[in-house]
Length: 349
Length: 173
Image (cartoon, rainbow over all chains, first blue to last red; front, side):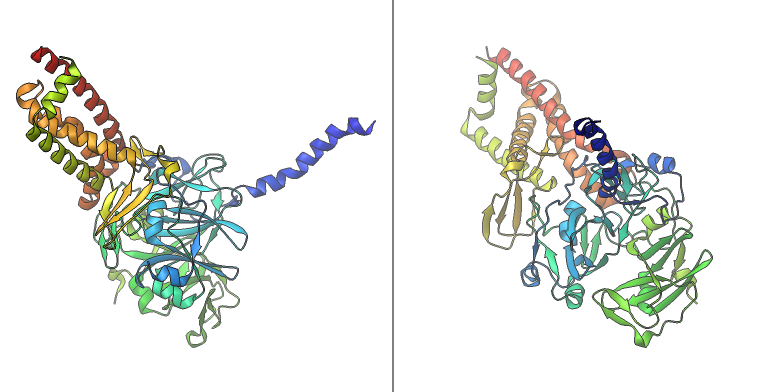
């Protein structure tokens, strides 16, 4: 067989060889989601509602620009909310007052493509690895929560679930990374060299105004006692609807810790399913770090160190970190109705 | 007299009418821009303007709701300026004044029907904010239809203007 007759065959083999790379370059997903699914995908799809704006009516930021701490200081107050990310030695802050208008930033940090997402209606911020895909705002909601879509396959993913409920990726979970919901003052104290998302987003918005209210102090839609806007799949009155909880999920279930309990206790031990988890308070960032602690290693609070990458030392060295994020209680309870709740007033002695 | 000339004379034929139509139209346009979110607080006290996004002038954020192209700061106010949203606000404002002033006695349909396009347009923009303020669970049902109120308002505006112009022309000929 001549060399030229072999050419198409070689081309086919080469193309087949490239397939795994192409698949790997799209939105990275986990075949088996690491979160509990309280409902079938069909039930989630039936609970989807239009949020008002159409697809990309709320435009994601796809070419983010960043500025220095000094430049950001002119625009941000110390108690303004930001979403912080620390990855591979790089720190970035995404101001809530910018994300409230865009909800998704398709960014790359240390050469790794990722999406920082924020849903104002559920007060939740999550990070996802995105490969070559971009995430966009579908304009639809489940349990008031942002439904994102993958611009390569069109698959739809509720942000707080992190699992595709529709499209070719249905049933697969996204690869999450930890982001921190904190204040600008707290973040820059921890990360003095952080870069900050600039208002040069490619879109014109009034970034000095939050259309839903404000966080310093909490007002408008963000007031803890205020009502939600959209129907939910499950309701719980154990906390005020917009009370802030720090939640985490595993295949065995979900758990949430109230903000008050987190501020009160340095270490919280939780039994979830047949395993054990430890939540460590980070007073500097006013958040918590969650670890899988099946052997119930005792945490030595005095030896804990809080640095750019989070908490270390004090017995945490061998523990597996678990992603966690803050959210409004009504939304957490709607997605995870069987959730463990730590620190509810009814549990107080 | 043509329909268009009759309409023009009815609206701005006398200086007092022209001033009234202009004033109310501008006030409504300002209110309209405020409720759709183009005009709001947050200005630093000075006067500044920049227009970094002219390429988005035709880009829609929703039905008949367009992306701003520039940002104008004036005193305590910030105006995210979209030429098309502004034009729409001015046209609807002019229509509101025209409808409420002339329709009760010169045109059929009554004042409410005449002002319907402007009211619908206002509803399209105000309603989500009002629902958020009130926290109504009804919002989940209502919000999906709100973006379509604006195109409906524009359609009604054109239809009623055409009808009014024809009737004015007939009554003055």
